Length: 157
Image 1 (cartoon, rainbow, N blue to C red):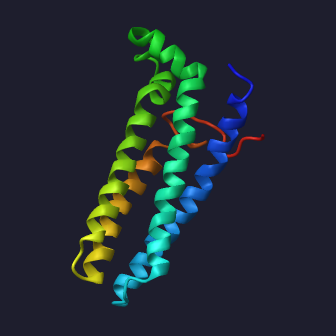
Image 2 (spheres, helix red, strand yellow):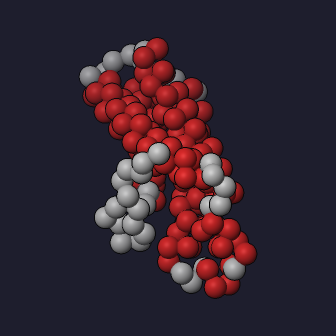
């Protein structure tokens, strides 16, 4: 394990809260805008892009962790054994696969919303695709209370 691993792990753990705050804020705003039949504004576009930026920054940190982590290294080198160990499999395969899927849903939602013919339709597309991405991400975060694998909510640097 390199000396940067604990720092990246703490940063990844802390950054998730920023991602979640921006994600949830965007969905609340998009819901409000759609419900009140408002126009898609530059603020909405900034919020949409902020979700994508923070999520993909988190994904980049996750990729670095995947490369550095002793857990994923064990998973990759002892696959036949590790795939049967719940916590090892979670970080070696499930967490990364589901977050990749959430990232794809964000990308699809963002691209489809650009081609929407009305603002109402744009908000609807963003709510569906970003909402699905958020649900997938929430289900794949190693929460402190998770029966799948438990990790602290906050790590120190």
